[in-house]
Image: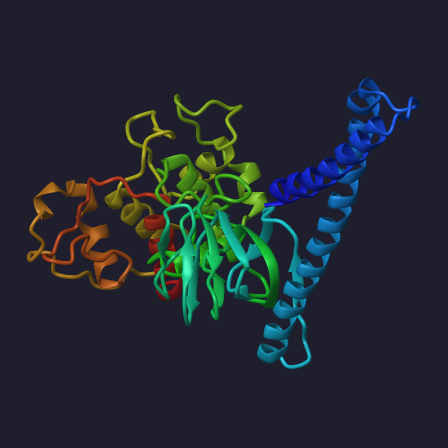
Length: 368
């Protein structure tokens, strides 16, 4: 819009100057030549005209921006009493946390980079990336840009433990959870949200990195033995005097002390005569067996009577050594059916980090 206006202004000025120049030449003014007009006078006049037009348009832009800012402030003043909200000039990513709620009005922009967030609104909330309107209550798509429509108030709520989200325009903020998890990949709507929160709060698990828990990632036997050590209260003296060794557990391995501790305490006997299989993905029946041994051998508690497993369709897939542990785990609510349609144990299925977190939380609440 700015360049056509500048061109029009310059064109009018140029016509006027050429007319004056032509008049001067026709009057016999020898000080003004055609080469002077075309080589010096006209370029200088065009430059001067451009500067004047730019200055005028900049002033108009600043006045318009001021008016829009005042409009945003007015909207938020109505929403939040005396509070006028905060302002963000760009969509640059900022860190937010679980439950943070940002209220935005007409013209404000949003972009989600990491984590999960949803929006509720009373009008039009536009997905500019796809060119569609987003329904109230829907979740934002990472990497998409959104715009709050005319006469609309929208509230964007962070659902994950942590999130990166850019805002542009005026917004009001209501802080969420005081001590949120730092994970982008654990969301309020996930079935494993509470178990992951439990193992994180109790320092049983750490994340795969600073901002990712890795709920679907595999859990191996070495990791689980480390978790059991933490659940035992991290008894340093017991760890230092443990001496049991396995051929496939190098002394230099980070998990070696915890595997030794588990074997010393009778929690694990390994997977063979002299092997522990530390990198092997832990199965559902192995988790049950290790928790059963932790209860009876380490905590010294008598295991409760087990459940009748005859109704489970895949009981035949369970190893003989795991039957008692599975029966006990089902009775205590540590393991539930792996299918919503039928009773299944899935004993040989690898248990991911979210599933193990769920079992550990149930174990802690029922046994410890």
